[in-house]
Image 1 (cartoon, rainbow, N blue to C red):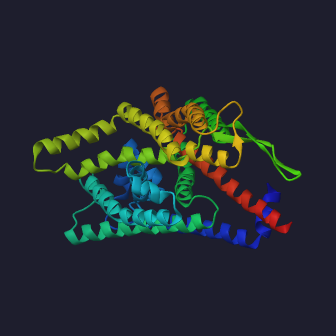
Image 2 (spheres, rainbow, N blue to C red):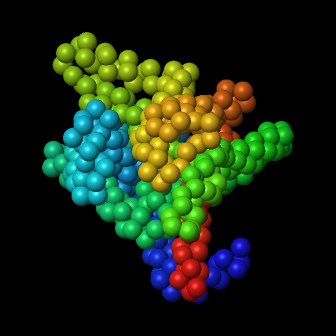
Image 3 (spheres, rainbow, N blue to C red):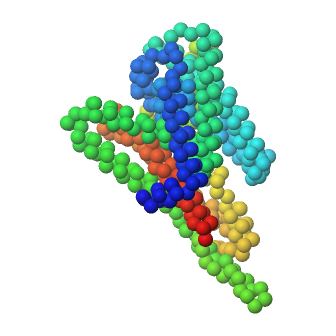
Length: 423
């Protein structure tokens, strides 16, 4: 470990990149503590502690929402915008073709950024409306100018975080969006430990030990699932050119158990938070059935059982969906055939495509099931223990471990490239 750190520090450009990323994360944390004026902070924290959905929103805003900071929406609008364009890529042949080309991907990225602006403004409006209708005196009376100014400020904060995330991604030290979420989760850890210490009771000793054991098992399981893969054997045909023979080697095609990483959970949270957020717009509607329907939607998503079922199904479905987006058996089969490679016992072409699709779906089932169970782990723990302050954040653990693994791998790959450059 120390040797790796020394290698990173000796490589001037890599050291500069790592320090830049750390600096951007510090800027993000500072922004998360710059509040918008006119908010009752105590009442706001009580509201977030008593609501599971708002607690998740606060988690993915890096704690900025609980502070009602200028970056309170985090990068959730950007994630929502990304989901929209990925879904469009599956139903629109034109966008699908654009996703295959570098220039097309750049144009889609530009559209994603533009779409983030109205989404951020809409979510900011919904959150302010929610806080005003909570009847807890969180927000005082404000004029129309104050309301618009706050919405613009929060929207600008989201765009600022989106820019920081892209700057981090350009340094190849990990995914910028994931690192921002990671920083928010880690920053909340000392406060959670403090809350546990303050409310500690000797009768809770065995409960705390049990939670620590479950946390360790969860971390180990996340590492095993993230690193787990099935190796598909690939044989390359032997070719003779003149008096020399080429090819004839054997290798393998690795199929990961969890190809999607933490993206399905991030997508699922964005989707599960969207209906109650939209419903907030219509709580004060003049049409009675619209207002009652909005209240019913919010009530349904506040129900722990229904919320858990929806969350589980969304994570499971998004795991398959994102795998379909990033893994293309037809392209792999085509590339193998062009290079003279084949899977032993499987005919090249359509048979190879069918075999890869069948094998992938079987493997991904376990990855999707694992991600879904991890996502609802806090709800399960709360149901069996009744503990509120000691709930293990399965989603948080999964994101932290997965982001650390991804970042370490990217840094190691850059170190390996430098070794080859030296040779």
